[in-house]
Length: 293
Image: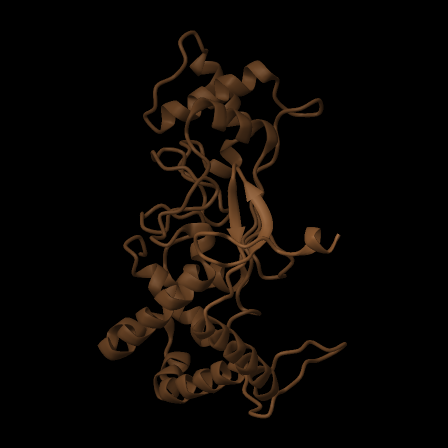
């Protein structure tokens, strides 16, 4: 039994084997290089020291602070305080200058555009895109088509208080649903209205659809918001249907879905999340993207 437990010695190297064998190949019991072991032991010592001097271990309600008392959160707070101090003069000027007058001061306009661009990337780009060209359900901010107006004051109102949210000053005006069991229009009538709407914006229409009936139904059900000619009403947030631009799309299927189910997209208000100076900077930036009036 003692001979059975005695490790086998490899004839070629003179080293003992581990007893493991694969396809006739036996594994040598080779020790790790000393340099590797020394580095490994050093990393253990280093990690222990790191745990002692830096925050490391979570506790029930807090964490170990470490001998150095270092905090990356504190570094960020200090950097932000320094940035606010650096910007204080320009920020105060931006806060006190009426929106239409900001563009009259080139230095102040440059500051507002830079701050607005940074704020847009952090807060608005997830919906409107980094280039502000939007996506289905989110408007393109670079064209000159606006639901609620493209003046800088209109843009500021929309950014500050949002659309169809709990803010008392938010813009309202949802698109009602005309389809379904209790809807004002039958499925075939919705098809007629949808194709008439496509005709308004210069799109092709489905063959055989009664566009005259679509016009009649539009006048009865839609013109109160969109106008007799479909040019919209910015006071209500009703879009201009004569342009080849639509938030959700102008294909027949999407228009039918819009008429049938309605639309009530929500935009958050940023007045309670961002300071007034940042909201003004955002308004200036969006206004300058190319579509502001």
